[in-house]
Length: 222
Image (cartoon, rainbow, N blue to C red; front, side, top):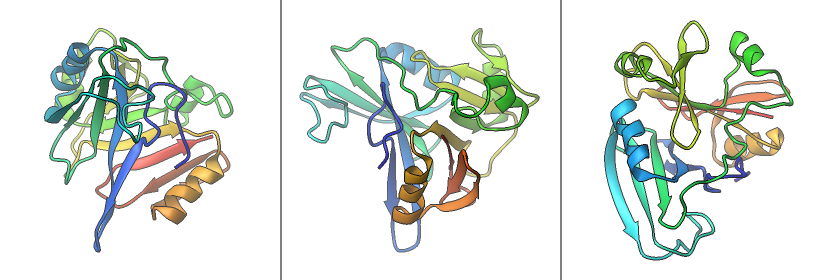
């Protein structure tokens, strides 16, 4: 797939599964520099659960953990089981304490400014969550701030943005993933033509796609 990331994300940012009846996006991958800090943020602050944890003695041949050969681990976290929820994979390489933040979650300089994007309801890059419980919990976080009338923004210890909206969703609180891409046409073609995502809306700089009404939406910007 087109690589959205130049920093600490894995090349395969979004995994996908399908059966004869459905296809859906499974998870997004973050490389983290400190597992204790990540636990405090994802579990204590965002209220996610640890779904599974695996330890590996050597690097993944498919570069799942990036270009590293040493010991590493991955931890799946989310609001429900992987079979029904969009979750996050936290990849930890033991010798690596920090990573340079990539360009996938940055505001695109080719479109509009940060505040203009907020005011015009264009999706700032990050993961979007709708939950009254999470919203109330995050309001007291010192690094959180309201960036619109309804969105509360905060970042994880590695600098990835999350946006929390008050309210309730029937299935999964995670409702949108917004990313940059260096090539909008190639990325849209990949997700719609090869992987079968439905295009919900599109203009010259943005595209919104999804596998279904109750699934996470992918918003990509050039």
